[in-house]
Image (cartoon, helix red, strand yellow):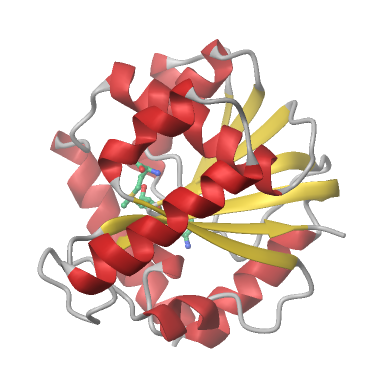
Amino acid sequence: MLAQIQSESKDYYNDFYKNNDWKNYPLLIRLKLIVYIKIAQSVYKKDIKTILDAGCGKGLYASLLNQLSYKVKGFDFSETAITEAQKKYPGIDFRTMNGDALNYNDKFDFIFAKGFSPFNTRDFKSSTQIFNHWRDFLTEDGIICAISRSDFTGGSPTGWIFLEEGSINKLYGDTMLQKKIIYLYSPFWLFVYLLPKSKYISLFLSTLSKSIVARLFKIPVTVIILLQND
Ligand SMILES: C[S@@+](CC[C@H](N)C(=O)[O-])C[C@H]1O[C@@H](n2cnc3c(N)ncnc32)[C@H](O)[C@@H]1O
């Protein structure tokens, strides 16, 4: 079942990447990357040097992380995207690989998975398997950071499933990792960026985003799943 879904979406992505890419605003993405890492480090203590960009597409996020002085590698199961990434950013190690069968000799401080399709699913068994598999590629105290969006309605107005809160927790099931989810409404990005790194600021903004913005007003917020190896 998983293999079938993946081969279908691999064809879909190969086709998509032939003539398209996601809307990209490098300056904004750079700010968001800084915010994701700041939030992860406010929740879990971890010095981050090496990053694996999971489902890296044509490599923009990986290249920006590289500019921010992280040592980055990226993988995607779309050959089309990886060929393009290798051409555009020859200094970065990009590989064609499936997320459920990673093949690296090294371990990473931070596995970054933004919009990674197997985590936008109701196939919780497969998503949990992938999180468990990635645990083997984390350094001690390493962090997985999986990013999606939701308003908790369970709808999919854009094709992206806005999972209910309970379903978001099921994505990582009983994975043997420390678990924390931070929710963030877009305008709050700037606070995280500008204010000192603090667990309490992250938790406060998360509660506001979840309870008021997403639950009450049904406005989608960013869902940041943070899992730490212990
Ligand atoms: C929605 S796109 C996000 C791309 C990029 N991370 C971003 O945020 O712009 C999802 C990416 O994950 C890749 N992908 C989906 N399932 C995958 C899998 N099982 N293994 C590897 N890559 C996968 C797709 O090819 C696609 O590039």
